[in-house]
Amino acid sequence: MLDGEIDVGGITSELMLASGVLWTAVLGLGLAGYWFVALLVSVFLFHPWFIIGASSNGTISTKLLVYPLGIWTGLQLSAFVLTEYYSNAFAGSSPAFLVTGMHPSFAAVYWLYWVGGFMTITLGYGIYFRKHFLPEGEWDRFLDEVERVNAESERPEADEAVEVRNQ
Image (cartoon, rainbow, N blue to C red; front, side):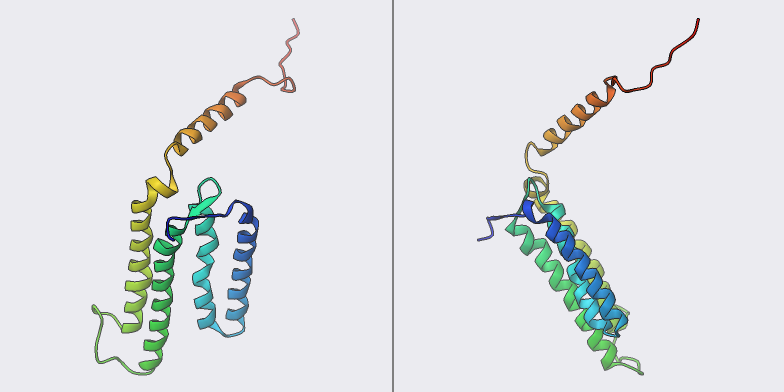
């Protein structure tokens, strides 16, 4: 099941549109006073960009949708839910305990959102880089394309200005 690939080559425009819709939803919810819902929706802003960026030759491995993207999403949502919970639980008072020296609501953001999210994406990139992000031969194709573009740009064109000297 996780060894499959999803063709995303034809839906890049739709993914970009989804990103815009999500940004608009976050902004609208925030302005309407639903900041927590806006915060939860903001987690999904990363998804279209991840799918486009992690695809290779118009496809993305389903493994990448589970790890790191699925795990990252779970960590982000957990961080925000725990932050909301502990913020409300200790509103107007100090907690009787700290988590690694921090207020529980901030510790959730620090450990799950920041450290957990960073480590998940970084580790996923390290594990899957060669196979999914830059498959065999892809780098060589890129270098060939760069050489071709450079060679074309070095050729003199007929419509370029030519200096004429009067003698």
